[in-house]
Length: 128
Image 1 (cartoon, rainbow, N blue to C red):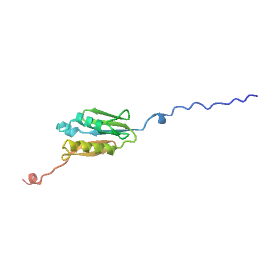
Image 2 (tube, one colour; image 1 turned 135 degrees about the vertical axis):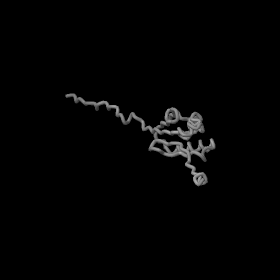
Image 3 (tube, rainbow, N blue to C red; image 1 turned 120 degrees about the vertical axis):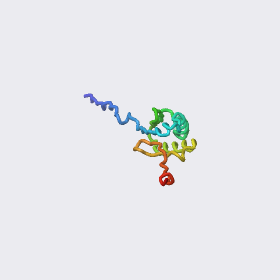
Protein backbone atom coordinates (compact mmCIF):
# COMPACT_ATOMS: atom_id res chain seq x y z
CA UNK A 1 0.00 0.00 0.00
CA UNK A 2 1.26 3.48 -0.89
CA UNK A 3 1.33 6.04 1.84
CA UNK A 4 -0.07 9.35 0.82
CA UNK A 5 1.48 12.30 2.57
CA UNK A 6 -0.54 15.39 2.87
CA UNK A 7 1.33 18.60 2.34
CA UNK A 8 0.88 21.38 4.81
CA UNK A 9 -1.53 23.97 3.48
CA UNK A 10 0.11 26.96 1.89
CA UNK A 11 0.50 29.53 4.60
CA UNK A 12 -1.89 32.38 4.25
CA UNK A 13 -0.24 35.71 3.97
CA UNK A 14 -0.24 37.27 7.38
CA UNK A 15 -1.35 40.90 7.31
CA UNK A 16 0.92 41.78 10.21
CA UNK A 17 3.94 40.29 8.45
CA UNK A 18 3.26 42.28 5.27
CA UNK A 19 2.56 45.59 6.98
CA UNK A 20 5.76 47.36 7.89
CA UNK A 21 5.99 49.15 11.20
CA UNK A 22 5.70 52.77 10.19
CA UNK A 23 5.90 55.89 12.31
CA UNK A 24 4.05 59.02 11.20
CA UNK A 25 5.04 62.36 12.69
CA UNK A 26 3.76 65.87 12.05
CA UNK A 27 5.51 69.18 12.61
CA UNK A 28 2.99 72.03 12.67
CA UNK A 29 4.52 75.45 11.98
CA UNK A 30 1.45 77.57 11.27
CA UNK A 31 2.33 80.44 13.66
CA UNK A 32 5.75 81.31 12.18
CA UNK A 33 4.42 80.71 8.66
CA UNK A 34 1.57 83.16 9.15
CA UNK A 35 4.07 85.82 10.20
CA UNK A 36 6.33 84.87 7.27
CA UNK A 37 9.20 84.16 9.68
CA UNK A 38 9.74 80.56 8.57
CA UNK A 39 9.97 79.19 5.05
CA UNK A 40 8.40 75.71 5.02
CA UNK A 41 10.12 74.74 1.75
CA UNK A 42 13.53 75.48 3.26
CA UNK A 43 12.61 73.50 6.38
CA UNK A 44 11.49 70.55 4.27
CA UNK A 45 14.75 70.63 2.30
CA UNK A 46 16.75 70.86 5.53
CA UNK A 47 15.04 67.75 6.91
CA UNK A 48 15.49 65.94 3.61
CA UNK A 49 19.22 66.72 3.59
CA UNK A 50 19.86 66.03 7.28
CA UNK A 51 17.81 62.95 8.23
CA UNK A 52 20.17 60.01 8.50
CA UNK A 53 19.24 56.54 7.28
CA UNK A 54 21.75 53.79 8.07
CA UNK A 55 24.28 56.40 9.15
CA UNK A 56 24.15 58.42 5.93
CA UNK A 57 22.53 61.83 5.66
CA UNK A 58 20.43 62.70 2.62
CA UNK A 59 19.94 59.06 1.68
CA UNK A 60 16.24 58.69 2.53
CA UNK A 61 15.35 56.05 -0.07
CA UNK A 62 11.98 54.46 0.56
CA UNK A 63 12.31 54.27 4.34
CA UNK A 64 11.57 57.97 5.01
CA UNK A 65 9.17 60.25 3.15
CA UNK A 66 8.66 63.94 3.84
CA UNK A 67 5.58 65.74 2.56
CA UNK A 68 4.21 69.22 3.14
CA UNK A 69 0.64 70.43 3.13
CA UNK A 70 0.16 74.12 3.83
CA UNK A 71 1.71 74.68 7.27
CA UNK A 72 2.34 71.07 8.28
CA UNK A 73 5.30 68.83 7.51
CA UNK A 74 4.51 65.12 7.59
CA UNK A 75 7.34 62.65 8.10
CA UNK A 76 6.59 58.97 7.53
CA UNK A 77 9.38 56.58 8.39
CA UNK A 78 10.00 52.89 8.84
CA UNK A 79 10.79 52.00 12.42
CA UNK A 80 13.12 52.44 14.22
CA UNK A 81 12.76 56.22 13.94
CA UNK A 82 12.43 58.48 16.95
CA UNK A 83 10.26 61.53 17.35
CA UNK A 84 13.02 63.03 19.48
CA UNK A 85 15.33 62.98 16.44
CA UNK A 86 12.84 65.21 14.60
CA UNK A 87 12.80 67.62 17.54
CA UNK A 88 16.61 67.69 17.51
CA UNK A 89 16.69 68.49 13.78
CA UNK A 90 13.95 71.12 14.14
CA UNK A 91 15.89 72.88 16.89
CA UNK A 92 19.02 72.70 14.73
CA UNK A 93 17.13 74.34 11.84
CA UNK A 94 15.81 77.11 14.12
CA UNK A 95 19.33 77.78 15.37
CA UNK A 96 20.64 77.95 11.80
CA UNK A 97 17.90 80.45 10.88
CA UNK A 98 18.57 82.43 14.10
CA UNK A 99 15.00 81.83 15.28
CA UNK A 100 15.90 79.75 18.33
CA UNK A 101 15.48 82.79 20.64
CA UNK A 102 11.88 83.34 19.51
CA UNK A 103 10.45 79.88 18.78
CA UNK A 104 10.41 76.61 20.65
CA UNK A 105 9.30 73.09 19.78
CA UNK A 106 6.37 71.76 21.82
CA UNK A 107 4.85 68.28 21.68
CA UNK A 108 1.08 68.66 21.31
CA UNK A 109 0.35 64.92 20.97
CA UNK A 110 2.20 61.63 20.81
CA UNK A 111 2.99 62.12 17.12
CA UNK A 112 2.91 65.91 16.67
CA UNK A 113 5.28 68.78 17.34
CA UNK A 114 4.31 72.42 17.05
CA UNK A 115 6.51 75.49 16.70
CA UNK A 116 5.33 78.18 19.12
CA UNK A 117 6.52 81.61 20.14
CA UNK A 118 7.89 82.16 23.62
CA UNK A 119 5.49 84.08 25.85
CA UNK A 120 7.30 87.28 26.78
CA UNK A 121 5.73 89.49 29.41
CA UNK A 122 7.00 92.99 29.99
CA UNK A 123 6.35 94.30 33.48
CA UNK A 124 6.99 97.88 32.32
CA UNK A 125 4.00 97.88 29.95
CA UNK A 126 1.65 96.45 32.57
CA UNK A 127 2.56 99.10 35.14
CA UNK A 128 2.07 102.06 32.76
